[in-house]
Amino acid sequence: MIIYPAIDIRGGRVVRLKEGDPARQTVFGDDPLATARLWMEAGAAWIHMVNLDGAFSEANDNLRIVEAVARLGVRVQFGGGLRQMDDLARAFEAGVSRVVLGTAAVQQPVMVAQAVEQWGAERVCVGLDARDGRIATHGWQQMADLTPVELGRQMAALGVRHALYTDVSRDGGLQGVNVGGTARLAQATGLQVIASGGVRALDDIRALAATGMVAGAIIGMALYEKRFTLQEALTLAGGVDAG
Image (cartoon, rainbow, N blue to C red):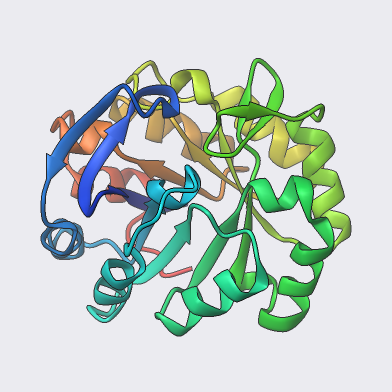
């Protein structure tokens, strides 16, 4: 199971939002590059980066930060505001290893299929982010009339292999990850599902790994609040896995 330490960027700073709400923001640093180095020194092979300004359709220059992190030699999984093929091309040109498509997966499934065909299934991930059992889009500010399983199966039919599942109600709140929901989603869709949102303790990592069905876990707030170390999480997950 791959551990993805998270770096969410807003206004060039490292932040965390509670339940994706831009009004409930905590700033953890002004230097995303330094944060990336910290996670790399701890053993991270992947870093999950989110362009929150892009997710909220706000003008930004965060891609240059992502490019600088990718140049450090770590694999970057990147999402937030990627809604056109040109957005994906720029991300890959910046050195991103895998893109995450959320809103685009709902509104432009043809684009997802094109991305898989052009760049390969290993470089494309879809976000199955849900609130109260329904898919959330546009930085989790809007809802779609789809369940994560329904959207996941649609994406799998298009050749998608990777997905991340965020239980939005748990994100940034240290309430515990939705282990059962994540495992059931993987089983129902056949996708390699990455758990996201709510990881608060090493027991969450242990439980996810024990399912034998979860491909990875994204950890944000728990690391920033020093609930445990990245090294401890990597050990429980089976060590560093470059995927």
